[in-house]
Image 1 (cartoon, rainbow, N blue to C red):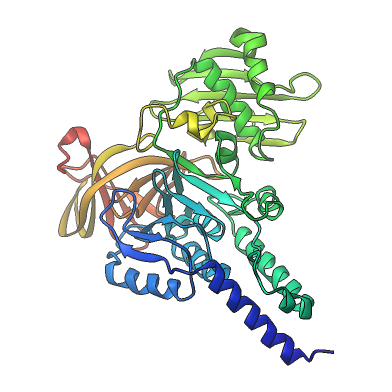
Image 2: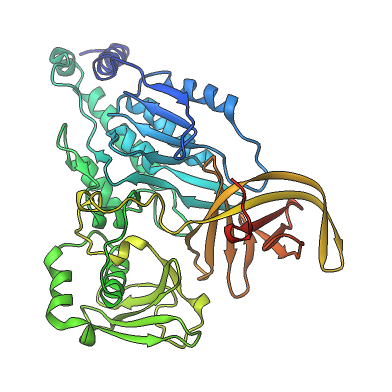
Length: 461
């Protein structure tokens, strides 16, 4: 019988060979001047790559005022050392690092897990921030030993290798179970973990259509949403938002058939909301024996709604609502939900490019030490002052709207606005009137104020 110590030596030897064979060349980690990110990781992930990244990050880290963690990382890697990749993944999760896969680049194997940990983090606030271009590749598979691994070593130490595999899976599940934006949902859902563990070697599980991206919270960019009728978009928005709470859509035909067979007059009825917004009452596919339906409201640059399906026991927003429901009771809906879920990313890549979904350009200022003078505030000291872009980031459990202002570094300042909610990066805030600004909020925690001037008011590049 081989001693425990000998097993340990075999284990170390075995995984040393694994790392040697799978990561013959270390990743190139460097600062970049790119609209997508400020750091890029290119090439196989190898031992000590994480420490290289940390050292580079320290040199270029930006001063934080009223923003989330300040760095966004571009990933272009076929994977490599799982243990090293897990260090990256934990760091991205803990520090609020946004992740991006640029056009025609790939993120595979452990790199895909790193990508899924992308988020922005501020004071008591966290949001998903993982974005891939529609021409890029995001692929998952189960970690395996290379085909030319020393089989005699495996034969001598099967239990050690088996335990190492179990530990690797446990580590993956531990990462996956961290909670996502304003939700009880994990960073990686159980059904995606199942796909990861069931695909071996070059049989990657790719995020290659709208359905998979929508279900697993991957933001897409580099395309325009296909032009279809608003009733059809409302119908898809209802069905997709409900179904993605449980898993990917089972059949492409099922959704498309309902739209074409019954037509919008039966499934979708246009109704103007009490606030004068264009809305649609949508009947769900399970309407009849079970209650199922939505009310979808089209805003200028985004879509909100509420809905339910008793047959699968899911809902969003205030569950049931109508054209008379106040807008703060609706939930933000992913732009992807407006499309046929089985639309391939290759199809979207052929559309006219659009860098971001619904960004509005603005000048963002962070000011400190203000002195109130009546309704006005005079700023004694000016802090950060840069071009930023506003995007709808999602909705929280109390159905308030979250608007993220994205700084050039990828950092985000998040405003949560609702019927009785006004938060700045998760902290209580108050409205200020400051001459020359369109909006100013003062954080009760830091005393700093975040102010914006919209693009049509003279934003300077």
